[in-house]
Image (cartoon, rainbow, N blue to C red):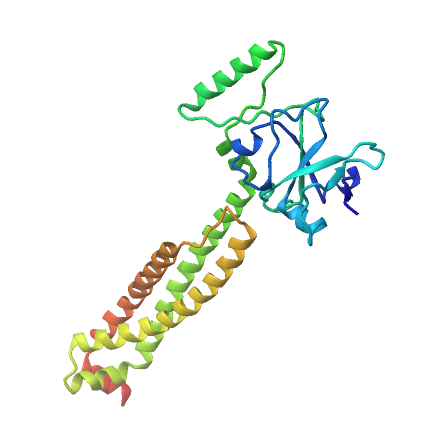
Length: 291
């Protein structure tokens, strides 16, 4: 069977787009097989369609979709011939990622509402003004409304992601403060427990530098172990998020290096104060207190 019916009831399963010639070039959607929608695909010519790679793999996994036929309602009497296969698109980060999509010429299946896409360079305000003027030359009574740049559209569509990232940043800062307090508490308790030992070491000739190296080294070993475990888990989670939000989030090695440096500095600062207290221990009083 070479026919596929894209029913209205399947709107969530298959996206439908009526587009003009140049649509794929403007949005830089690659045509991977066959051809795209051309200016000659108009009223009175053969009905054609372009399908996405995900649709082709879902419905014709073992054969080329070129030459196959699709229709858009079970009551349609005419079929559209598939003339090309396009790359997948990220239509929505959560609900429609790489969803099967069929594209048809808008001149063959016109719509009452048109979205105009334009690619340009220079000042955005000048581009919008020129676009409105071009529309007015076609039909002065045709209003151009809700004009936005692609950056503005992405900004609006990712508002939820930004809110989540801000919450994660706030929780991350709280976790950093708690970890610093935890390291300080552990090291202060360790110094208090080892006060007699430190007094003995200093009585036998250990210098302040030796005590600092001992205490700071112990704190950094604990912090280093935690950082290594945390980075391994963070890298794995980052890969999962990257695959879930393709094109939005990417694993940045420089970010992991920066995080490691920040955590190391926090651990060092949280360790230095207890280390200085340890170095200030009076050997005589420490030995009397431990006897």
